[in-house]
Image (tube, rainbow, N blue to C red; front, side, top):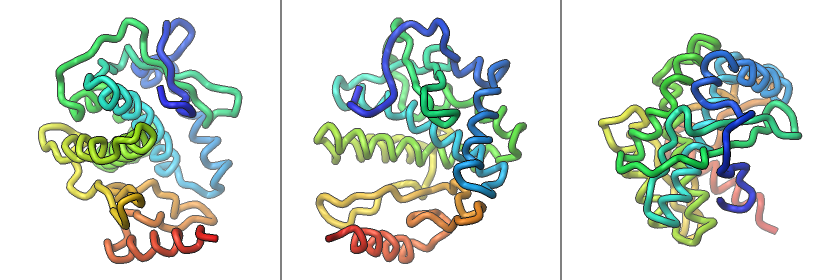
Length: 233
């Protein structure tokens, strides 16, 4: 995998598969919710669910992105072939593992992500009241962000972005989103254009993210440019 991503491949013994996470090991999700609110005081319950779903979707999609960009194949990340475990940094610090016997699949990327996420989406809805359509918008954002970052790391950004756009624009599957995409400010400055909302604005110090779907496209570009200008020496 890409250096820095908390994803590896190996046996799943002692790890929590996605189907278990959605069933009898949902305590890991509940601990994540608590830690999310502790990190961003006041974050509402739906926001806690949004943070969690966004993280799971991102790392699932990152696993697909790296495989696609390096080998041109999609790993079979079904709910019992991908697992999580807490790491040393606390409840929000998770490690992810693809089963060592996971094969590849010819299925479209959107379908693979949908199959993997369906059990968890329903459980998070019950626990947090975050609606399923809102969660699928976050899955689309996580998918696009993962491909954007993987493409940058592997020096093939255009190919990565094209794969992401094909997936989030495929209306056959639940990660379909007509708003998720990319803002290209220059040849080297490309940013995620969100189609969903993480609800960061609900916490005490919160606001809309720079490219939040709740901002107009013009305001998103303005906010991005301000952040870029502020970061320059």
